[in-house]
Amino acid sequence: MEKPLKIFITGYFNSGKSTLIQTMDESAINIEKNLSVAQDSEKTCTTTGFDLGRIVWIHNETNDMILSEVEFQEKRDDFSEWLAKNIELKGCPGKAHFSIVREILSHGSSGVIFLIDGCDKDNINNALTVLEETKEALGASIPLIIIANKSDREDFIGAEKVSELIGEKAFEGSGKTKEGIDDTIINLSKLILKSIN
Image (cartoon, helix red, strand yellow):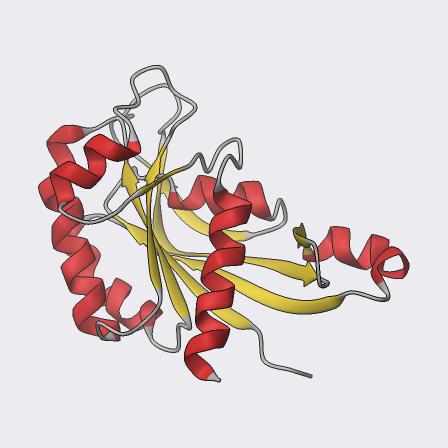
């Protein structure tokens, strides 16, 4: 069986890594624990191990789609003429003291989706620390796309503002609603295949 592409989903604490992976694959594995103090009504747990989701990128000459592994198996006959590529989404804890765990989990990654909480300007410096740590662990040449996450929220500051704050291009997306996420995974997968061919 052909090896899957391995996409590392990383970012600082509360950037939405687990939510994105669970949205893409409802049966994803998640190792977490309850927070002693809830961050807000939605953030009551934090990843302490890892997240692992499995999806499939299917494509032909004119179309691209992302399906969960379960969806793909159910609809496999409908896409018999399409090319299919398995993708693993591997997430990690985002708190500063988990830097060693992030480094270990990043090994073997084909590409990176880096999430920045687009509703929390106060943690931009923490996000930049994790971004630099990721580049150092995987090398500057690994395909990497930055997402200003949580575009579904009213307090979202926008990808343009996030780009300005971090000094790098960030794209708008929502791990909760999938807005922009399928396209990001497709574009990153194409960059990965281009880099290994």
